[in-house]
Length: 475
Image 1: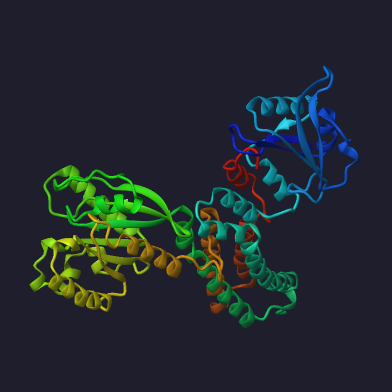
Image 2: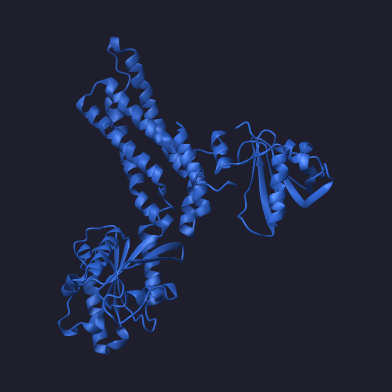
């Protein structure tokens, strides 16, 4: 923290401008050593200046640039900071860094600027992780959640919960101090009611992680069905390019194929699965096993049915449901939404299409998992846009509650919430059974510690190193 650090904060390569960030107790003084223009030491905070940088011992200019001064504590890191905007030449970037290092800086480590912001109280750990997620966001929905976290939505909620527990913790600690006088400062019924309320809040936050992870990493969509139903063709149609091999030979797709695509506000992770059928081929059997695993993990399932291969006269909602994978029939994944898509509708007559419309209404009322039933033709593109619209409808209804609640997207935070729930449960049980005050207080301390670890109020060097090692150097 006593060093002055520097790094290029813009992406590698050639661009119009590259930004070099300098931060630390000597940031302004060191930059002035390579600067020619109005002295930066005399500059007020948040002021930009035009000038040159160079090796002035040899009277050699490297570039004309703009230097912006941010004085502590009103900077990103909370320290004196200078951001130098140079032309984007790789040579200029290298020379500018070399000048700063020679003048007294050292190269920043991964995430060190944000780490210093945390250590200087400019943000907490949850907000810092929000910064990383903003940089890595790949869709509008992921960006919206990351921005909310960076602005402190999770931190404010956890602070609110911790303050409720801290008030009661103080009273319990007083009881321990006056244990010989047999006094009760903390109302046990009030403490129990508070603990139950907080456990409910923690469970809600922890439960949002699956949704948040799907939005952040891409909502998993499994395309399933029998062999030659058109699954690979549907994947290619959704992506608008040939990603999967398409063939009339049964069992062409023997493994899952994944590809991501942004549709509307969301990133979707499409998984083309091996065709579901009985087979003696050991390789194909492994692919089918992976198909079932993809169904279990998917948040959206597109069940593709080749309508041209069915006997439409004997077709019923029950027989269609019976043909679907077991995971859908049993509704084991209540958070998954199913789109049934009758493919090759261009190959059937008008009477068959009317029959399909009647069956569609029956299917929609048959299962809570079935979100929509569509008739499509992958061959001529009929219904593909409707599938895309349905995907975004499902995502909007089931995955994105960022407007009215907090969503957890970070695995470390989710694990800390799980540990908080694990420690508050015996606290509740102890209060209900009349557990000794010192044991109740211990469970309360553990819960407070777990909650504090999310925002970094009880910092761990190991945790900090792990988190910030995943940041880029210039952040």
